[in-house]
Image (tube, rainbow, N blue to C red; front, side):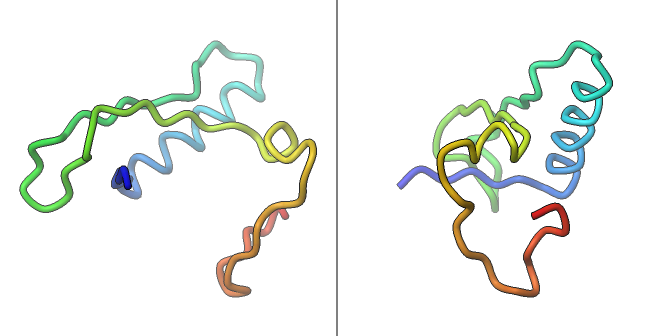
Length: 75
């Protein structure tokens, strides 16, 4: 199994990119994780992480279940 660790900063950056895209600004909505040598949280491979809006991702199915306390407000 491949594994990537996203920090809060990474997650907030991706959300910021989605917001900028919604405002019509240019962004690929992606970050590249390449810290395969991190001493505690190494990525298993270099990987691009791309954020997409829920309305675009869940076009043909419902979102999977999450713990009730973790359910995003937008769902």
